[in-house]
Image (cartoon, rainbow, N blue to C red; front, side):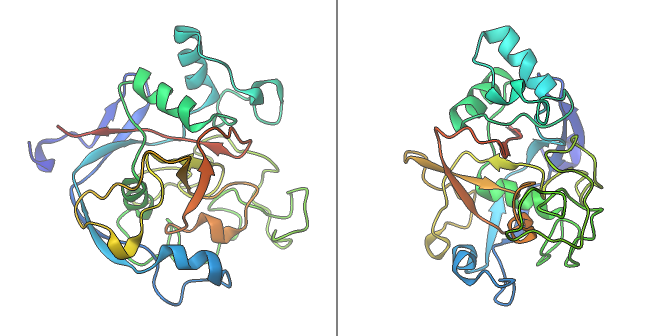
Length: 257
């Protein structure tokens, strides 16, 4: 089946809207002058290289508390700690305090899986090559994403001159979508990936997958507690698989057979 014969949008078994990311090549990683002053972390994003991926569908939105409740009600899976906190338990906010194992079990229940790092980055770029953010290269002015702005209760690495509108998580879809029609690919909460960070100097071109048997996995997209540098398309975060953090959620993908 070719991409031309595929529906651009489908609805997953969990009721989530998903959009097609077509097969083909994209540039993964960062260009040499894009470190924004974070030289040490920036090294993990190089060298920029060509990656070719098969087509796949990805959730338009981050998995919400309401969707995750359907999962826990149906399976008896443990409920996240965030649900006793009014700052994070609204039904239309992204579910947080879920470990990588929790995210995998949800995905399997929904007939899906977590994206690889490469799939996530291609989706985040929205068809833009060499853009820093899902919307382009311009720094955020408060209308593009939820990150560590003046509302965050910290004076470390936040931007006192910008108000993105939220102190904690924001309802999914609160900011404009990227070129593929995906929301919150920058900011709000980090998103679990299926694999850990592969060495870009040794990465295969076609459908690369990083380590899947170690104690850590990649998280992507940045969060409401992080500086805007973390919300760049090429930014590579990592977290132990057992950690269920207040700033980490996920979205799912489905392979095209």
